[in-house]
Length: 343
Ligand SMILES: C[S@@+](CC[C@H](N)C(=O)[O-])C[C@H]1O[C@@H](n2cnc3c(N)ncnc32)[C@H](O)[C@@H]1O
View 1 (cartoon, rainbow, N blue to C red):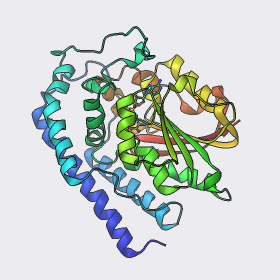
View 2: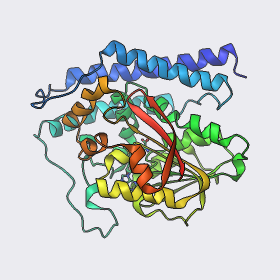
View 3: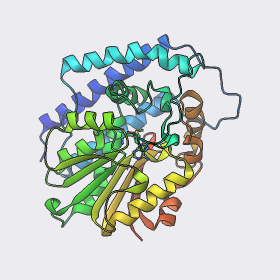
View 4: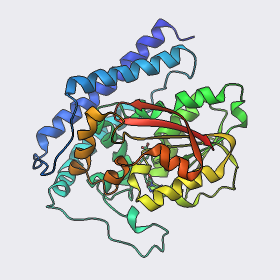
């Protein structure tokens, strides 16, 4: 049972993260040139106070689950303080390039390749106007800071809501018999949380980016319980019905419609009967109608070529087409956590 001190530690950690990244966000806004207002209609947007209240509610929900024994309090998942600072400096040093791409004064979009390296053209883009897209050590080192600044310190907490449906599903199961996969694991934030909560599970993370996988290895450390492999989500290197658990965070909105459908079908194919798929990704239109305007604005401010298609669809019906049946869905600030079993 967590003690009062555990609760204080949890609250202090989350508050420090939010303050740190909200500070970056505010400083970044001063440094960035304002973008022109969108010239298309946008839906309603929440006030800053509503967003803050929702973030607080997200942390409260997580703490309630921890207190109820569903999963342990998160460990601090971060580099040493000196490395933390170094990343912060790198983030600010890179910001002018990101801003120049946003304003169209720097056009260094990654060129289409020959695919000799197996990387599809839809993947070779400066997603979010990131320097080098997904394709360099520099990008991999900056990514977590960029995402946390965007979500003012709540990105990991949104990802960790995936642990709630997993905890419910695990009841009566032995974690040591669970074989799990994180599809598009990137720098390994969700995978590390899963491993931290249930270290007995045998996990694999796959991603197309070798530098991001290296960053994930640095975060998770050397352990035979977590494998990391370069592979495409639309052609998972696993046999039919061979995995108990499949998770994925913030991948699906980065994919063209056709590839996204293939990825969901692959997740269903590799899942054992009785297994669980948990997806964490952006809210979609109608999940919180009073916030729909944010989903209109996001691709205007960030390079998100497939986001508008993503948010106008319905994850539950895409899952059904792939042979997955929704068992739960929870809105978590700007994201949604949906769990499926095989239909
Ligand atoms: C927005 S990031 C999300 C990463 C991580 N899951 C997270 O929560 O931060 C998208 C990740 O998906 C990977 N990715 C994109 N398309 C992919 C594909 N077709 N197959 C495997 N990985 C892919 C990228 O390399 C990148 O690491």
